[in-house]
Amino acid sequence: MINNIRVLLTSFLLISVASLISCGGSNPQDHIFDISVREGEMVPRVETQTGNVLLSNRKLIKINHNDTVTFRITSDVEGGFHIHGYDLLVDVGPASKADMNFTADATGSFDIVLHKFESDSDHSDHSDGDMKHDSDHSDDESVVHLGVLEVHPN
Ligand SMILES: [Cu+2]
Image (cartoon, rainbow, N blue to C red):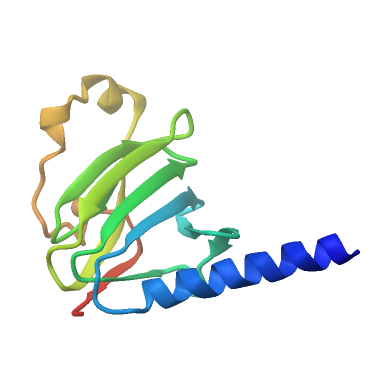
């Protein structure tokens, strides 16, 4: 019983110290987001000391300028996970987890979209060089808008 209280107190102290450090200024932070794309929607979780926490607004990922970010992405359909503006793109699908790493060196709001691969025949032709595309493709039916990445000034 007393041991349990000690453990609780110790973890509480550790968390308090950690939050003091992380709130202590405009130092860039590291973020790890686990993002699963399900039926055209994004389910984003952020890694914290106590586990993975579902974001309250699933369509909005907020970070600060110069933070470093890792997205670990899974998807129920094959496609390209694309952050506009930053123009970051990785292939995602049910078979594997894709990683995207970047430093948030530009502030603003950036669309996060999924470009669904059209068909199996398309996919067999697919190579890394094929994925470049115009930044404006809102008319394209195979594009699913998942949410927004907001990068705030420090
Ligand atoms: Cu795109």
